Length: 311
Image 1 (cartoon, helix red, strand yellow):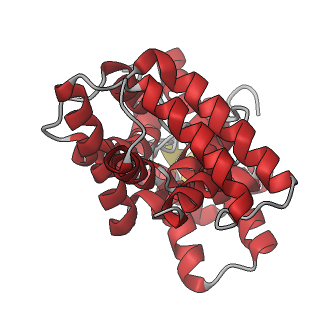
Image 2: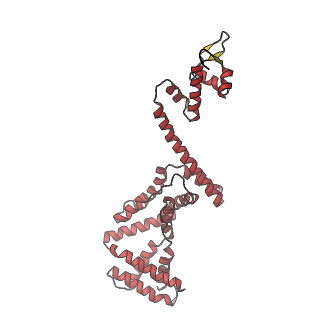
């Protein structure tokens, strides 16, 4: 295709492998105009037009829209800028495809219902910011108007779900479960009660912050041993364990171990012992690839049940 050689639209189609109708469309759009026409009105193309057509095909294969192709050919825009923009767009498309693949694998593994599939697909299509907003809206509603301990509030707001570019099916599963959890009115009400209780404690200045970790460790230690020994929370063998734990809590609050303190302690533990809260943090860990916290709520629940059974 050198020199003054010209080609009909059919010959050009044969050379490039493009359909005649596509070349005709590019010609009519002014992207690859014919070099000249015969007396009968047939289009003829020279080597420059053929080279232009090759470039158009390459750009279109890369996903560049026709209007941008024309601007590139007319030197109105820089090809490097266009390439960078389309590379960014491809990154988004690749990430979307990876998310869809993870959703499909999760569906195949779970044998999901049509409703679950719809929810999984909807959540996977959300942007990172939209996914984070689901959690921040939940946190804002739970803590609205409350003066909480700063460390607790900061921890909640700093821990947001970040799906990786290529999530595993279990991460998609976890994200779906998390979205369902924070949308559950019962869970939202439970978290609000916890927040209100903590705010009241902060206002009264009755929170022994420096002793929480030791009390938690002692409770877990005693409840774990009781479970290992087969001691039920309502059994007589649980009484000395309960007494020891209550004394430790009373000492932390500088209070007497009496009926009123035990009622208050039971109320405190009942509000704070919700397995869904622990599950919330476990799901966040799965999504973000963090170490998953162990399941400890049943041990706290042992103490709650044992304390309740003592009246």
